[in-house]
Image (cartoon, rainbow, N blue to C red; front, side, top):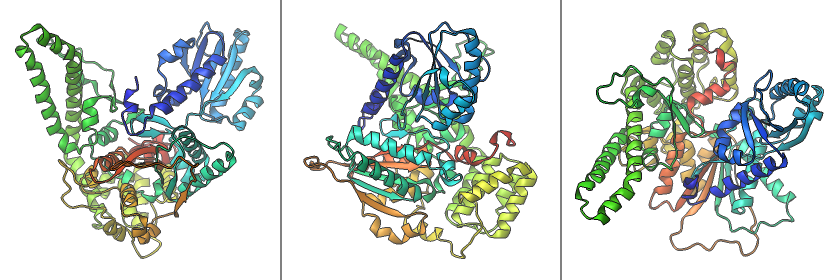
Length: 600
């Protein structure tokens, strides 16, 4: 089922199996038939851990979405609420329980908090008078969820907002706990590096937790050599830029959620010869995207301009394979061909899907609007006219383009200019509020608080120095056969990944000056390993680094890290972990107040 999790350097299936085991144990505590009432946000992440079949084996007969009012009828003994510890959800649960109690007095109620129990929530249930109705109140510690063979995410969507806007460090505690769980399964990580305030907090919490468990030595040979903790606000620029890898563009345009994407159905309609195409499907086409699919694993991290050639090459290979049937003469040859058929048919349908997706994306990337937007982004990244009002942004506001697009560009200009001159900033703010509505003053205020949109305080703009020292802009990036990570943004090398690359070789000492210009402290910690657990490295064996992005990571950054892992001479393999998979749109949305009332 999840074989693709064990292909990589680190077998992430171990983590998934540990999570499944805990889930089974909890379900078995509630004897008898069960109905699960889901907090809707959890269904996606849970789907990566356990399919419905596992729940069914443990007598789960019905599943409902948590909503106010009465629960749908179900002839079951146990009702289990799977919820995040949020006060507003407790009120809905209380209402559900009240309505049920009057009808079925023999039912047992249980709550499973994900990822932690919360005293505040239990207090709220007590105030509502329903705390006594619950037989079991438990927590299911689901911090890091394996997404792919080299990717873990906590799917904690509000982490960046909480850390930088609300000064709430709950997500950092969950991160530290998640890393402790990881070390319990994969061995103590000997070296920890970090950059940023949040990274420092997480490292401190981890070291404190390790001291608290000082009695129990971890006797597992370490799988990871290094942990690198990176704050998202060390590199605010990368998520604002339009990702130009295949997977990055799918996410930018359609949004990938828990490994699935929903696409317009008309491209995927199977038309039979001679039939009218009046019965086109109206339901979006839902596809799962991960490295279990051979073709996707091959093209996901390519720059989109290299995808067409890869698809046509694959098409030729598949047709040649199907042509082989004419050469099969003997019974043995025919038998062999038939045994390969299922694999070939799967490859053909996979090719058809990705050709359709590529066509959908190409319609957008070849449009004038996309090109104009990208041109402005690249001008900002290279430092062209970042200190004055941009005509393209001005025109886009006048045409009432989507607000998120405007915010992404204005924030990008601010980040590349180390803040905007007061009169430029005031002009943009005024234009945005007059065009999109004054309620967005809260959003602009939030963007200012987190440092995305700010007035220039010092006369010196450090961005050009950082850009030159770290080679963040590479002219003539090779998109077809890349030789540098800058291919993921067609010229711009993500700052976060450059820092990771320099750390591996020649080390951060070589860029002390630049590190001081970026926000937050940088540090190095060592964790003592018990005797006998020091790795004896084989000749030519790669080191393994876990890079943890606090506040979110984009698919283009993940592609850049995979590229570094595959480089012949890098000597380093990367596993990626994050609080949330993000793109510029979802990231800005998480910082908006009342985004649902936003203008189209």
